[in-house]
Image 1 (spheres, helix red, strand yellow):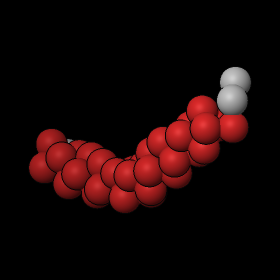
Image 2 (cartoon, helix red, strand yellow):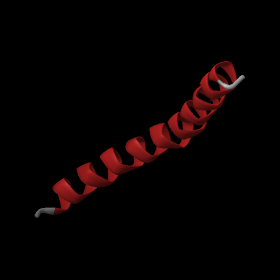
Image 3 (tube, one colour):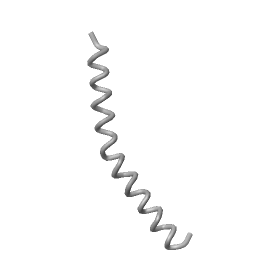
Image 4 (cartoon, helix red, strand yellow):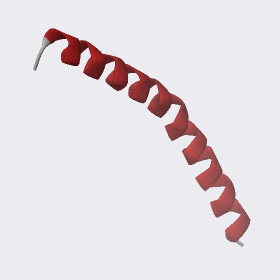
Length: 40
C-alpha cells in the first residue's frame, strides 16, 4: 500500500464515520416512533 492509498482510505473512513454519527441517532428515533405507534 502506498502513502496515497492510506490517505484515501483515511478520507473514506472519516466521511463514513461522520455519516454514521448522524445516521445512528436518526434510525434510533425512527425506530422508537414506530414502536410507539405499534404498541397499544
